[in-house]
Length: 340
Image 1 (cartoon, rainbow, N blue to C red):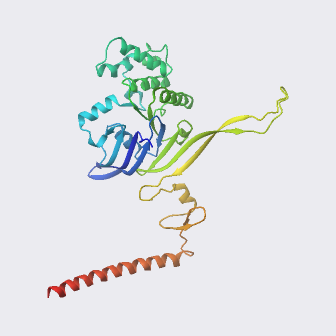
Image 2 (cartoon, rainbow, N blue to C red):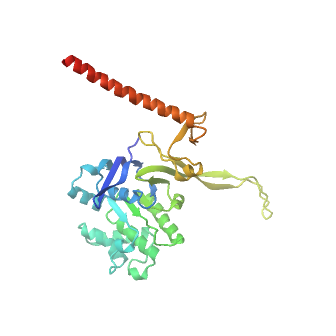
Image 3 (cartoon, rainbow, N blue to C red):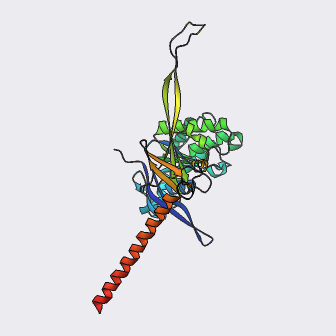
């Protein structure tokens, strides 16, 4: 079995904020195969941007393991991380001002990272033109940013991120400032580039609807992987129909999208149950697990129905603690008698 291109194992990130420790990632596990187009979603503060910054070499985790391709990011020094960011990773940010230099035209913006990396001459210009053509901006290379729409500027930014031929493309809310029609064009551009260049592309977003535009979506909640949604297509055969115009009675075949959402268990067997499920069945504090023929059933612990069962569990716990305390005392008694 092939090794994943991205591997995060027990990833922990703690920030110091106003003298307090804030746990942004708490034991996150994630794997991404090479050539995959996937998305990471989550509410504000869930840890998704922290994860992207770690994958891009912009930040270091507090603990755990993170590997991208052949690079073990925890073992790299600052010089190696700078080279990794420049040569292996392409970044696309939500704000166009962060992606582009306003006084340069489209092709000059794409050439700039290559110039900073030491490239020069005709080959640099030809690659910049090629990348603009790949993102659908053929014939727009000499246009200034003020002459381009927001969606066109974002596609220039994508071309800039690919200037130094990275293997990993990270996009942070790339459609956050455009309308839905333009967003579809940008997602289509990511699809084309991932296929054409063999990129591994990770898009960070807060929009659950992104599942229609990528192969897989993982959701982060409270710094941990909570669920995974996979998209697949299958051929559906409709019943034979009679076309009055053609007299055609053959069955029709249509492609149907199928989405499967899975909760994710960590290495200790823990899982995050979606909040809406817990609220729907009034499950909070404690719950009862029942083994059924189909699997494990989680149900609310009713104070009336389950009080005897919970009380028995409490008594058993108290008995174990009492036995442990008495066992501890007997050990000390034996040691004192032996000493005397």
